[in-house]
Amino acid sequence: MAPSVRPLPVRPRCLLLTPIAGSPGCLQVSLRCTTSAILDHFLTLSNSTIFRKNYVFLSVVFVSAFGMEIAFDNASNSVWNTVNKGRQWKDLKHKYMESDDE
Image (tube, rainbow, N blue to C red; front, top):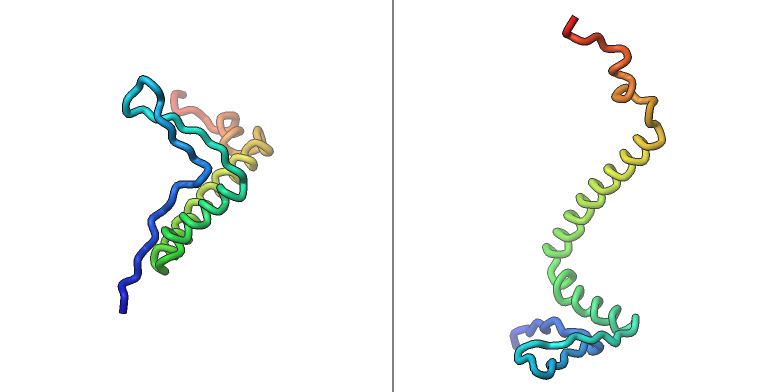
């Protein structure tokens, strides 16, 4: 049985690297990509890195779900605090609490 060969990620065909005249070792990057070329490159790259092995795919799912949970919680708390500004205990506490200096 022949060993399976994993394809290397390919750079998009629309990415052109051309040498700059008078500057050895410097390359000029020019993009002439269409949406389909970018999508094709993204799908090829994600298939060869994320979806190839089950444990990598599950790790990506759990880590991204955890990150999205944190982002959603922070965004919803920010909206809630903005809408209810001046009506929450943290905003009114200084009016009702006695200071310890007296």
